[in-house]
Image (cartoon, rainbow, N blue to C red; front, side):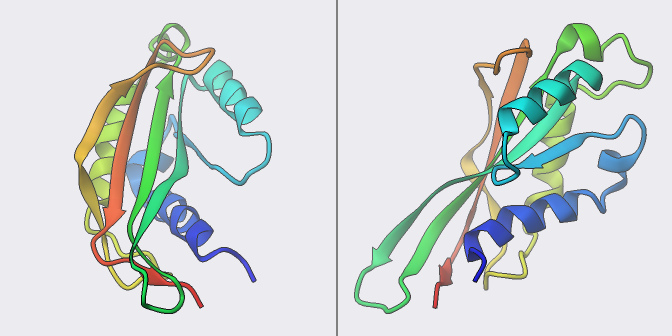
Length: 153
């Protein structure tokens, strides 16, 4: 059985790839956390394209301990967007890390993953500047959570 939680961020990536902003040239590389060597994939994307996004599981709470499953709520999905500013902003029509982060926020807020009963909503700390990974000079994090959760069987 595959992870229900994995399907949330994989579905989020697949949903983002239906949004023309992410597929129009220059396309944005979107990586999910279970794709193997994501550090290498990030380095390649930053060296070739200058900007990329990574979708990660931020965590989950289990506030209803007497429900079987367990029932998880406040499931957090995090998108981290990194930009190699020097490489990226030389290209015509470049997309900045902030623009990519804003478009992720817009595309995933109130989007419903197939594997959960609730929509993703932007977290209170929805968009923040973070320390960039190696190879990048600028990075943002975008956070979402489910408003009700899911029951794992």
